[in-house]
Image (tube, rainbow, N blue to C red; front, top):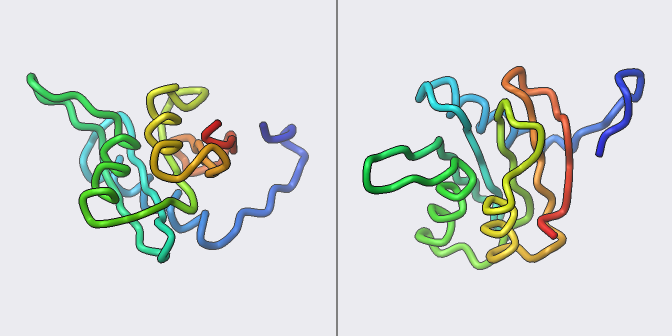
Length: 121
């Protein structure tokens, strides 16, 4: 978990990029969550929440599914922009399935500020 407000947290530019992409997806689509993942080659996959009558996926689950469908073999990092205070266990499981337990999952608020960084454990 990140420290208090007075702590200065340096965010890797590539991680900042996926947070920005996730935030944009959330705003553009008017959905509760936006997410982005970066695969082992540096490609990014961006998604929003899917809420159909017959299909419900979080933004992060959708982004992971898009990466898998596009041939990604692993993940370097994942980001979700949400009002929630922590990533859902199902989101961590999806990231862990493709990227492994050590894959960083960045959780940012709607303003794009990083709130939490955890491993997909």
